[in-house]
Length: 92
Image 1 (cartoon, one colour):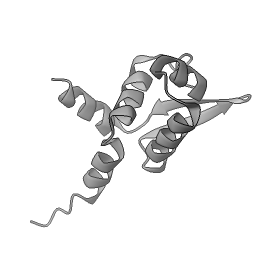
Image 2 (image 1 turned 30 degrees about the vertical axis):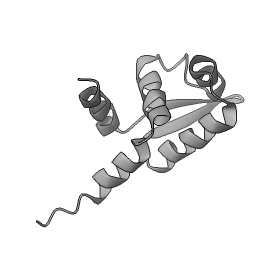
Image 3 (image 1 turned 90 degrees about the horizontal axis):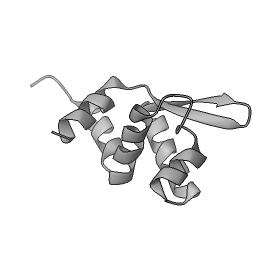
Image 4 (image 1 turned 30 degrees about the horizontal axis):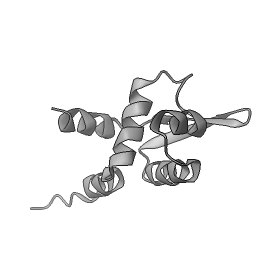
């Protein structure tokens, strides 16, 4: 066994929280222009803003999502296609 699975393990650790899975699902379902800021995610999921920011930071640090700033608002999107595939598998 030469394959190390390090990247895959890091991906699984990053998404191994129900709220992070919900955030990924939300970002995949919403068009980039709506539902992608911290405030809109908070309104939809109903959890405190600092908690959402914490989860977003974990996902961003692992390269699963990215944020682009427009004025004062940061809009997040999923950039790791494996996360989308993983979510599809989990929902089966």
